[in-house]
Length: 384
Ligand SMILES: Cc1ncc(COP(=O)(O)O)c(C=O)c1O
Image (cartoon, rainbow, N blue to C red):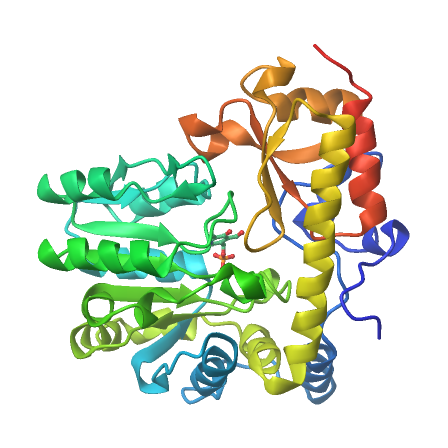
């Protein structure tokens, strides 16, 4: 089994997921956050066993999932997480909504930090709360949380922060110092922090990723993390995520969630996640990180050579590239022209918030050949 090498375009076109069905076959799809790699062998074995034995019923009340994640967190992040303080649900989005519903009252304001994963705006609303935008700050060398403006928003009554760590779309791994300050600010205002850590397994080893709940006692007292194997191991369709807490009060809130929230966990998702988080999958994940490291550098080189007006910072984590094409003069939403004329599907920058004007998000969780072809097609458009 090739470790970390993407499938060919011909193999990929046999897939029927969103990435491969949204656009016609002449379009290279680099939009939605699915990857083009074969499954980790341990995941394949777990799913094959389930199919062979018809193990397709409801997910059990007691599963090895929380233990598997706690082991993974210790091996990969050096974090001692307590399996007794976790509960599963169908996906990260659902975990966020269920938690927001409990830590806010209808109409409360929730801080989100655009440019950010577009459904965050909808998830806050789905929970009955209201979005308070505090954009990331461009600090020159990278993006960071704007802690001054977050403090002001909390002083003015915001009740929760929806954190993205690592951040989608910029791939920023927030520093331990900024997360600790965020925790202190939230604790001082009795606000909650919900940390979406879906991209965490894809933080590059030198990026200094730290789970929010590992940062400080203050973080543990007011914090909730929502985690999943789904981005790193491409399991989004199988529906499984974990809500994680690390102190008594948040754990109590988690226990009070209706049992139905847990019942929505997918059985295949749980089985696949246990295999993904197991020690057996560590070398596969290391291989993937190496491939993504090569891909992010390849993309940077291609942009420098062929689209020098593009502004791109190599992300610390994940397989998403946030590219500023403003200087090309292709308008607020350059993805439109790129789709129409270059036949490459990228995610629309403005969907990530007003800060995304002139930007595109490109998924480089694929082969070097597809990345190279995509940039060549876009560069061939020339200037506006
Ligand atoms: C930051 C972030 N959160 C949540 C999700 C969606 O996760 P799920 O499918 O588990 O709801 C994504 C998907 O790309 C994401 O990037």
